[in-house]
Image 1: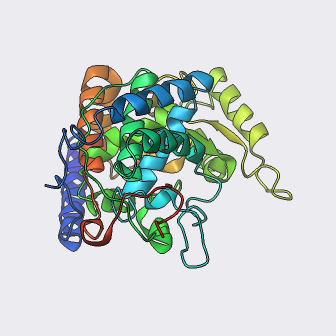
Image 2: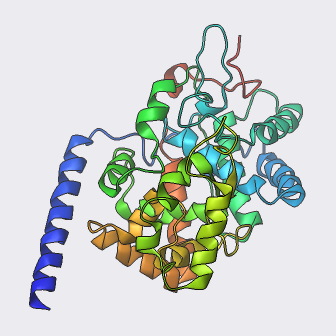
Length: 347
């Protein structure tokens, strides 16, 4: 027992030193707690904006609860590339290479038509006033709320970027098979903490993953982290995953097959995602790393905390979402705009 405690202490020290090093390397952070943002930004110019977004999101989530996850993912992918500036919404043009077809985004992002509908409604009410970046940020909050998650006030006042970050989408966004330290570094580089990372990962409670992103997991260490060797329920779950996602891709037929990352309550925003991790059944490697990595002494404790306490998870998720939403693209306050269409820069 003494040896185990000594070993764990060494791991904690190593993890701390790695994170300190990462923090130093990424000391130049994005615009957290941006002074341009405020809760009453549209109070005089478009007081109905949040009501319009809420109504449209209610319709979207009523027609298909999965739309909540689509909008939430769009917001994440927007904020991690250049800050929350609506760049993820831009289509490719002759003069602009958007982020939608970057390898980490291609076939992974949907929900653009929902944002288009919201933008059209707001333009008819308050033309040229509300940025697409703000619309997406409000919509992400409402998406969570409408499927059972927490509420938080959204600071507003973002401007839309006139350029996109195709290359940054590959370097900044965490990937399904990434190791824990690498994932942590990507969050820290955005000014987000390890606690933020574990809380924001809880968004996967309403998400789905494609076969191409969980194939390595189910044919890799899934059996080792789960109880599928002895638990018939876990074994049956693994078998279903393998039938959905064969080990070798044939003619591109299965790569885009999808399944829920939370197989217990996939359409409800709750803390069951963390219970899935406790069972060792996280669908993608980067999720299970939070609990099973030998470097994850800190993240493991946070996972256990959120699994045991839904309120603690909800409170931290709301706080972390505000923090992430406040990552702004400072360039947009110099040359940004309020787009007329979220898909194209103004001409």
